[in-house]
Image (tube, rainbow, N blue to C red; front, side):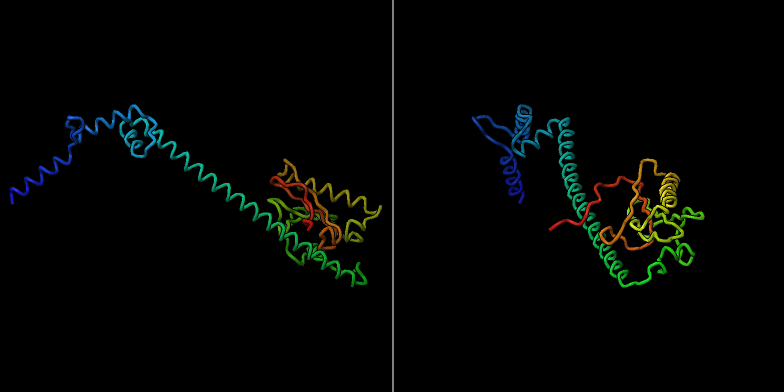
Length: 240
């Protein structure tokens, strides 16, 4: 049993040695030579040699780690770019869906108004807001105009400005010379409230008119949007 054990140990030692050109090198000598080759070949092509290079020269390890981090950062940036692109596409799809909904509402309202005989007596949702029958987040009000936040905001800041006495201003196209004063006050109120809302970098004032203009409430109102970078042009539905 003891003889067998010694034989096994001698075999392990023999396996750890290499004879080349009459010179015997043990495993330690082979490691030393391998490191010497790694020093002469800093950019090792073989993955094994690359590992030896990093082990032989610890200062290269930071370069290797930096390259690994760079590749990881590039992969994350690419994934982020793809995610941003997908998010932009989804945003455009949502915007297109919202546009289609508004167009449908506008066309439906236009068809409904065609059946109405006495349009001056109709009561709009804005009339009910003025009468305090429907709650709204009013941010400005006087005897002639009212400003309140849109229930479906399309920007970080989105409020409406309306005349409290509608008269014949169901739409901008119904305005006459007699409406010049109230029209001017609507614009002036939009400017004042926008300043109070902190829209110093700019904003957009939109007036929808008729079915093609996506007007769904026939009570003249100004949309004021801002608080972020808006896009241009507003555009229309894509043509087939």
